[in-house]
Image (cartoon, rainbow, N blue to C red; front, side, top):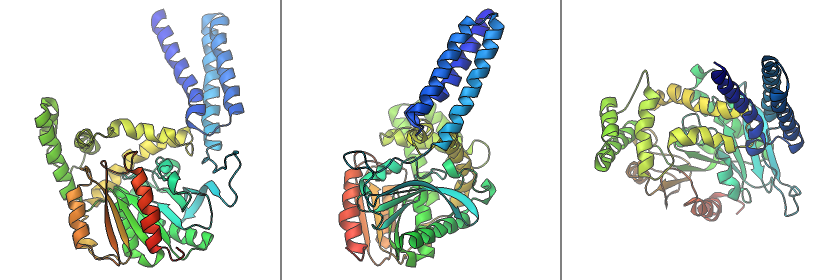
Length: 408
């Protein structure tokens, strides 16, 4: 019994101390705050062994650690911020902007970051990392190289990250997302005195991006898609079949059995998300990309814009949003529903992308009618990474901006 008690106390001490350890590693909490909290935890750990009787020492120490953990969580939320844009001396660049802000969109409070070296540059709206349910802050750092030429606005859509509680999940649908993105566009145009803005979407948000420019083409200089989704049913079935054949080829009998038991998508009902993630992670193996089961919980922890609660809510938001929104996307087929767009269109496609099947992207591009359109092939798989980020930035600045922004 004593051994079990010791193990339990040790586990609790580690868990409570972890909230403080995470502050300097994953949040914007100032050093003086987390140092004070860390010292408090050290004192409480010492007290655990010094106070007698043992039961009293455990009670006092663990109670104190609970309080310290609560303070750590609260401070992580209070001090959440986006990093400043500075010169070589650590001073903010003149006329730059780097803010984390709450905005009201259609009577709901949602969060954005606004970052740029010059507030007078054109606006690029990053709709988020995909999902459904992936916020814009988790991959915000991928756009830092564009902050010289754009004011980059990243959005945590309702139902994820800092906007987790913006609206009830039952209200997450096409109209909600499009109208909130539209309201954000109008806000940015007015605030920064821009006639139009640019909009970027990847994976799920590439669907939202097409819907948005289709509905309000007059507000956008161009639509930029990456990991462009075209036909959800065809894409998912092709992905499932590839995952199954790839697993057979590798001799992974257990995965073959699981995939065959799940059957081809679309999936509904209990364990829907697990079934999608099962074959999608096989595709990630195929693309030499991290598994969603690994990367989804980790990615928000590197975003200083998130407090500890926000980091958990980002993962919760991905899970809940996917379950609510993805079934609503099963009839998406842009070859018939968005064969004509009234804005310039730039689509980036990974040569090895089998999440948003590159063959379907090319098929859509070939039939698409737009004032101007470009299909840019990137190295790598689904979305942006170190292998293609440089090419993406080069095209965004020297092609997209140069060809579409009137002041260039």
